[in-house]
Length: 415
Image (tube, rainbow, N blue to C red; front, top):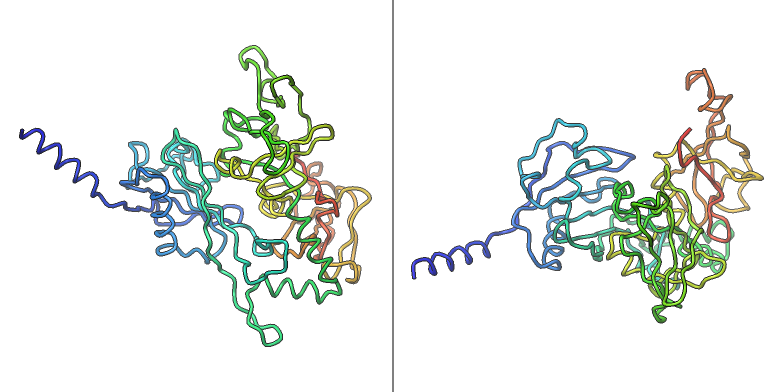
């Protein structure tokens, strides 16, 4: 009888333990203009929705989410990641871009979007619904799937335009119209930006994980649909034996009851890291780029499996500091004083001696850029960096084409 009472008391005690949060380090780390924070979660809730609610409430109350672009990793307290963890090992440094040997302990990632405030929740002109974009993914433990949760938190500054107080995203929208564009054209440009992009891992460092390599895809693939809210027609996944096929990680197939078709439309975004392209976005589905097949993926499933669909503009802005540089596709691009074709031409770029860096100042298909003209290509010169620079300039450039694809390219494998 005593044993029963003790068991009941232990159960009650364990159920009443309050979830607590412990920052792994007192200092904050900076990487690619992102402010990183790393926090251990002790006594985490076993219910996923409760866990997400608790972490969201803690983040809004205890973290300065508006200081600048931020990425927060929450870890479940384990033997490997105790609440008082301190690391001097570079391979396990929580301040690095890759989280090293403790990646599996991550149970939540909260990340602000780079200049996502230019987006709207609907294609209709309903600017009062515009909020900053946040990516908030949660899982119970290392063996669970990731689930995407909404996270609405606006850091936009208030501005007055024509005696009407609006948030920064609306100011930019009004500015778009002021640049001699019609409302219809502005809306069309916003819509195009939302319709084309790539599918990548929700946590950037996991694109290097063996289980996702090398065409970024979950182990069991994605469900294929015939149309938005249409019927299931098969799976897009890897097939075969990786032990006997050395190309296993580089081959993806559409598989149905009576078909097996190899897919080849994807983009290299890193050294032997490839991502699916999508060309349309409708009612919570994205259309896979393919000339012969009509395949749609459900966004909820993509997010649930630890991936996300991002537009080309968002991806390029986020990665501008990670790549060697962007370069204009042939025949080249012009630099203007305004983000439209009425802006005065102040320069042009053509070839690989013009290195382009994107700022977070974007307007529709345009981005404000910093351009460096080199005397010799940085990969093939004996000049030091300062001596190799011929001149620098800045201005607006149309970095997204009318079909939603980039007007720029980069060295996915470095020099």
